[in-house]
Length: 305
Image (cartoon, rainbow, N blue to C red; front, top):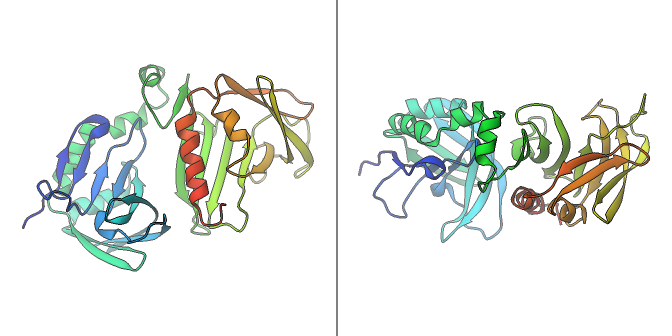
């Protein structure tokens, strides 16, 4: 039976599937995600029979080219843990898939082959339906952001700054790194960043708040990060980052159950400052979705407890 890739839906609901009339027997799906996020590739035929989430290397071979990526899984019905990865519109994998006839996918100890019949034509339609390239190029456009303010989103959008969740692979270690940040997309203009890595012998989430640290601070100097929302105040032990290894500001670590996350999912704004320094105010209203997703990703990692 021929299984041509087919476009289904429009806008945020647009998705490509490798078989139009196969019921639940879908081998793979490329789905649009909201508001400029990379498309999500789900590889159902590479599912692992497990109740526990997995992450690890995933290899995709098309003709004589092999791509290795870090995949995470989601539990899908009777299939088990389905590996997924985000693919940006400029990703070379899409070009290779467009030219190929099939792709061989290896995840965990399983290997499967998924046809690419009609993928190139379907991808052109998907690109228009999802408008992914257009959204990414206008992420900083004020009018575009105004249009999104009242929409459900993995971003919490305030003016031209956003709360953004992303995940990538550390090329030096091969570990998956989840990143929560507040600032301008696609730039280094951020005010707050939280990172967690898998696997990691340290089960803490590393945070840097880009607060004023004074003149000529010493790298690693002990200090406190003071976090305030309304009448609630947290004082977190930390150290100075002068910008040698990360952004300049105050570094601290917390776990995924820390009271800080409740403040960041509250209403209004949260202020950060170095003990005795000037305050930096960051909006927290509407962040429940993005902060919640970040914490779930961090707590899913093997050494996060």
